[in-house]
Length: 163
Image (tube, rainbow, N blue to C red; front, side, top):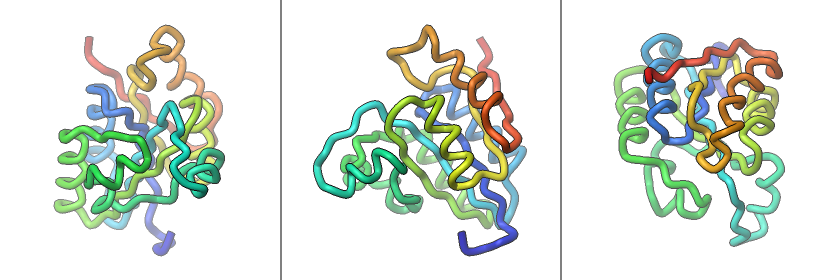
């Protein structure tokens, strides 16, 4: 990352209500001018459309600038569909604060990949919701935030969804 004093604030997003709440919370309470806001999303299945995708399956996608991840055509290549509200939150934050907003996509188990992101980007801090992250495995997925809290080196904030 270009600016050495810019902190790298990661937010785990799966485009659920809870992850949007976590994103809003991070923007209101954590992110400050000069920071990098990195939306980390974990997709379930990898579509091998080209060779570089195979490489990314292990290391995750390159950092995708906000202008690109706001475009459906670009995101289709990654097999990820950000919802309009998440994009609106990200674009509004980028306009209102002097921050750089990017997205990084991983493929696989959210528990492992979010930990990997924290270590490899590396993140200064991570914000994650306590619900969502993987509709199919909802039964065990309450444990994504638990797993991440216990396994990453950086500080983690778990934003709770109101029932």
